[in-house]
Image (cartoon, rainbow, N blue to C red; front, top):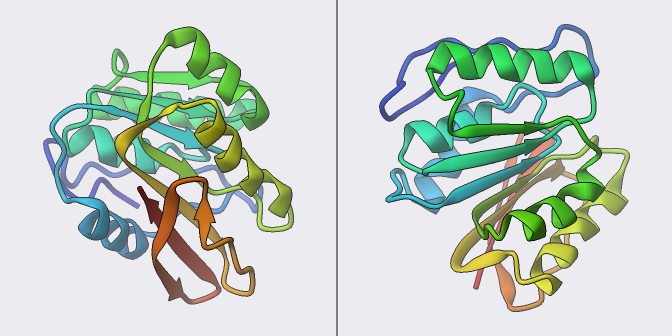
Length: 182
């Protein structure tokens, strides 16, 4: 696993050993960013269930200004911190050692709005996709935001979350990625 493109292209990233997290492969990550825009001019990325932090680090490498990662596993937070240090993004990356359900309150308090919202919960925990509705209802997404949901290929996510509609859904092995835009 590595940073695929941008200012930190090629930097290898660590992931948590074992099966507690499921890192997004480089192929899937590259496909996601080719669809939502290969490069960005500022903005904020929010990653729920951060794991290794690779999606936020990729977004930072491609030009977002800052990223918030929510991850409750202390070992995963240590991996994210090490990856941020390796990529020299410690100032731009805000690691929240917290349950993803606290993300809406944290973002509201920061007065930040997400340009990119990545959500990749454990596949058995399908109720966590409802957090997208909470972000939409709390007006925590920019008008040009993209919502990226990684999920089990058997799970069919809603066609829309408020005014954000599914524009693409692709299958990669046992995983699928659904992308929503306004």
